[in-house]
Length: 377
Image 1 (spheres, helix red, strand yellow):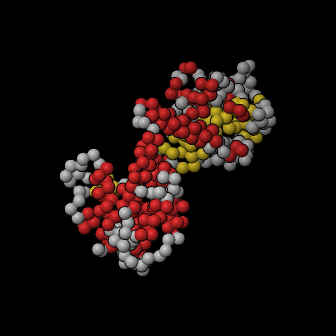
Image 2: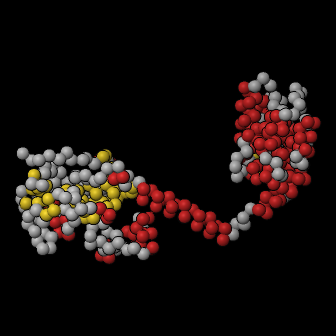
Image 3: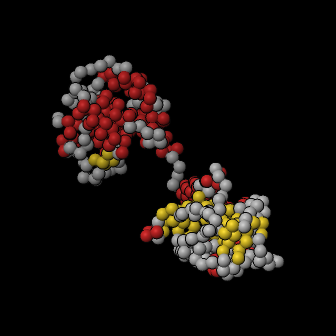
């Protein structure tokens, strides 16, 4: 028999007049292994041992074959080791009979298959066929491990009994496990690495526009403190952050935006540029610019110079000192930005992360520039 019909279930001669056969995933992989080994090796035809070894080599954790061998109390590793120690044989032992024998076992296990009905040949049928091998040593090996057609049927029955019933409870459990996995993965990513944010207003025009999609990272602050010029996403002082388990869960998963309305002022985040660091003296001079520690900042990114000074309560049109562990934040679109001039300083503990990359729109995708600050001459 030509090689392609020996290691392929799809050859016409492989099944002669038998019904059509559909092989399982384990068997398809085994056939590929046998085919490659036969083409590379000195032998012209594979033997029953080659088919058994190939099947064992494709044994994967949680596969049908793995479960069957577990029920037979015979691991693939032990069977492969014993197979390797069998006395060698050079005779071609009619390995192609595995095809017909396994198909016969498959038809027998099927519930009265109609003529020309496709039959599923699986690993249990192959093992039964190998139990009938013309290789005497191989048959002895199967008997040593108490692998017979009867023991295979009993093992398959135990496998089916141990399988979870496909009930509503079963599918509910499966769905719950998927949801828990996804939520855990989402929380880890969002808490340790970063998240995506949408620009909702014009406060950062012209650099950032409405509906820009940004990547907010939460990694670099572990290696360096936030720097002047960083674009930060944060919860401003007037935003209410619930401390109850439900609020914390909704916040760390990012679902709070789907539950709370903007007017609720719950978990509302802003995006602004960091202007004042702890200890800095900040003065916003209307129609002139921003002064940090007495020196004017060079700010090519602003839309227009602010026409108001710092209007905290009480109003201060002069310099303010940034307290320890707090920041002074301003929007680039100075006259359309609700920022530290109005609501005060931002605490470090309410920072979400730093905007580093624009994902959308496509014509402006790229890294966000970090301004090289210098005193204006």
